[in-house]
Image 1 (cartoon, helix red, strand yellow):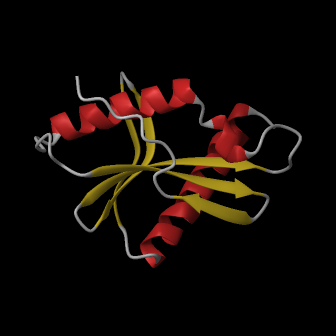
Image 2 (tube, rainbow, N blue to C red):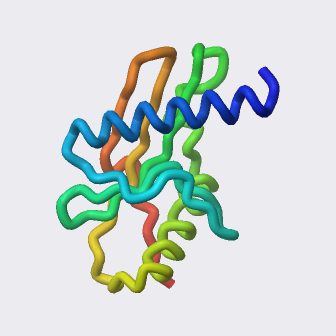
Length: 122
């Protein structure tokens, strides 16, 4: 699959998860937030929490499970991008945040709340 097709498929899966979280009662604030620190697939609001969602898709188990692709390096990048998002929006340091991972294997969705706790405000 070429890069363009992968991007299109990625956008489709992110849109699928956006609908999924909305059905769960979350509000989607932004999709594909980019900054020099990294990218966040979805930024949502769940009650008072800002939720930073990483979406991972696999069509088969030829590679690792989708959620396993969110390794420590990826968690750090997401965390830094989340800090930047909070800073940009002038949100206080006490703002409750959560990092979730939406995993799609073929057509099956697994949604993991509090998937990682890497959070350092420095």
